[in-house]
Amino acid sequence: MEIGLLIRYGKLVPGREKEAIDLFAETAKFYEGKMKEKVLTYFEPFFLRTSDIEEELGFFIMKGPAPEVFKLMEDEKYLWLLMKAQYVVEHLKTDILTVGEGIQEQIERASKVRVELGI
Image (tube, rainbow, N blue to C red; front, side, top):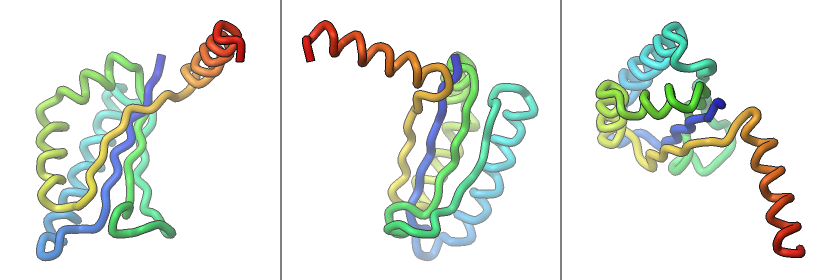
């Protein structure tokens, strides 16, 4: 089963804009490499056009087989990139996503729970 990974970030830390832009390129290259290695089945960066830009400037979305994504999250380079991001962007957040067939499984589970609870 596939899962998703969402990494969100806010505004660039003042005075560290160059480092943040360089890190964006380094991070995109890393995830593109993971696509080529078949660790990930999907990767795309996004910038928000509307939002509270201080809190949410952009995000990366990735998908892949659950074991591979969990393994990726323990990869030293992944951890290094996240650590660098903590110093150059604000509001850094990482979330695991339910995707693909997991969506239907979650809906079916909710339906069964509703029946069990008599709701």
